[in-house]
Length: 418
Length: 46
Image (cartoon, rainbow over all chains, first blue to last red; front, side, top):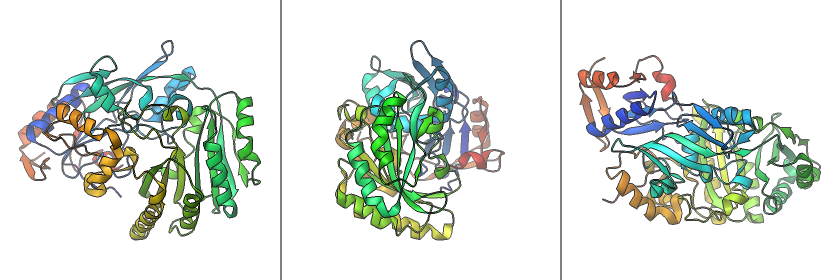
């Protein structure tokens, strides 16, 4: 659905290219966008008629297995990252779709399968190298440019172009992971089970539950779980999910981490039409569940899904102002992923997603996950402010310092006030 | 390559002379693409 045509695309080969392109954009006053993995559904990576900086040529990953860290260039995807870190049996939290870019995901917070034990992707960031609007190359870490480092962990791409990220890694062996599918007739009970399960699980587990159509075309409720611990303990923890119902399918099994990262890949291949709505939730009420079940039955497309994605226990333990990602009290994000193929069905699918979002609004915090929204022109100023929550004013101060002319505006934009 | 019409941050457009664009491209190690170049269509798709 994103059909913007930049006048120029700089396919950067390294930091010097990025700094050169930023300097060119600044000196000529150009509209600028930055493409990392190109995964953001509203398409913030691509600007209309301006200069697009493409980082796809900068995807190297260097793992230090002794220190358990990885240094990764800003154009890498989580598939690139996981492939290299898993060679050493290591990983860090990194989304739930393997072709997501590390840059966008981390800068917006970074939910993922490992967040129950290890927090968000941004919680595992040790340092970042970036090119600022002035064209300076800085390192941000807890010890160096600490306020900027705070802002990079949830503030999106507002402060510069991160050319490399350094992450803390953790031992991650085969997970006990996979989907359990329940008949749609039992969707309310299954999602209530999910709610009770998600609020009482150990750190080793994290979950996504949803309403979708199975590969054979039948509507189902699904609970997808990853247990990052001993397989024996995982069997005990996951037993309530696998014995309920009975399920129509139970595909939970010992699973390599890289495979678990691809569970949702086929649902989000490029070339389809997408429209997403979502919000954070602190609790999942019976009414919220009933609302999702009712609206799923009216979806115009069989490819669409409604879901809850859990934040994760360790992510919840971080204070709301410790990083720029502020939604630490959320149990989960609910989301409506409208997916279809025919452009003639755009209006019907977008209308459906908006109707679901409106119906779900009373059950949410009213705040979006930064990574699931787009440009101010489409989202509105208030929605973007709400996505940064209580940290917005502090982020504005940071924007004033590092990008007072708002060179980096083609994003979930924090407007400078100077 | 000819002069390039390009959008500016303030919502207007500007014309970059061919020599300016060439000088920019020469300062990059990676390629600078414009509409019609090989790889342009693939790169702009997200």
